[in-house]
Each structure stands twice: as C-alpha cells, then as structure tokens.
Length: 223
Image (cartoon, rainbow, N blue to C red):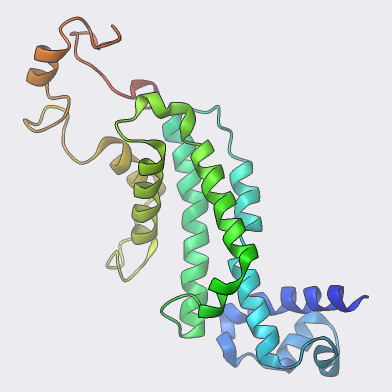
C-alpha cells in the first residue's frame, strides 16, 4: 500500500471515531479500527492531530452529498423532487451537527476555509441544487437562486436541535412552507386570495390556465 493509500485508509477509519470520541480519540483506537499497528500512523502522519485534522476535512467533503443529489430525478414533480433534496441535505446537516458536538465546536474548524477543494465542492453542490429547481422556474414567484437560499436556510434551522427547540422539521414541512407559505389561500392577504384573483385573472389567469372558477392556481401540478 502506497503512503497516499495508507493515509486515505487511516482517515477513513478515523472518521466514524470522531463522531464518538471527538478529538479525544486515541491512536490505539484508530490503529485498531484500521487494522494496523500504532506505529504505522506515524509513518504517514506527523502527529495524531494531523490525522484528526485530515479526517475532519474529509467529513466536510461533499463527494457523498453530490452522489446522492445526482441520484435525484429532475423529471419528478417539483414538490416530490424538493422533498428528496431536503431529505438529503437534512441528513448531511445532522451528521455535521453531531460531529461538531463531538468535537466541542460551535462552528466548522477555521482550517477548512483554507481548503480550495472544499470550496470547489460546495460550488458543485450549489450548481446541482439549482439544476434541480430551474426546470420549474416559470412556476415560481422567486428566482431559483432565491428559492434555494430559502430552502437551505429553513433546512439548516429546522435540522438544528437548539434552533428548532428540539422540534426538528420534516422535509415535507420545510418544502411545503417554502412553496406554499403559511397563509391559507382564502386569507385576505394571500397573494392569490379569491377577490384578488377575480380582479386580475377573470380570463382564467395570465396564460389562460386558471382554476375551475377562473382563479389562478399556482404550482397545482406539484401538489
């Protein structure tokens, strides 16, 4: 096994241990998990901290996240598609939050900001997420970029036990809130309240695709 392969194997063995022991993980525990002698660690890493730092960086790499996003079919209805997107993002956030608690950290380690590979990976994630929203851009009141921003914010907050006061949001709750808001369709201030729709869409909506009473019904195909 080459030094690079050995490093990769040790990082892979260390990652799950970080969730359990944080930085208190021992080289003995790492060696046992990797199936090597403790001395092997120091042939490819200068110290335990160097190995732990490399494992932390690996935990934040978006490779697995990208793979799971690529599996989402852009052809399914928007609502179902976003349910799947949020489920993937939520699992990612939960894993990161668990890791940070184990590390005793309140924010990602500062050295992560110096890793250009992670920045490139995050840009790829954003591009993939946008690609899953853009096919329905004409059905949205906001741009795909704005929708993605709202979706990420609500998913992050709704997946954080302290922010959510212990009541984590489900993917369905998150997506339905972003797509539908919290006002009832018949509320006076609703964008498509019956009286507003009657005044502005008596011809069945701007494209003639109104509801049975001539009122616009946004995103009906995605409900």
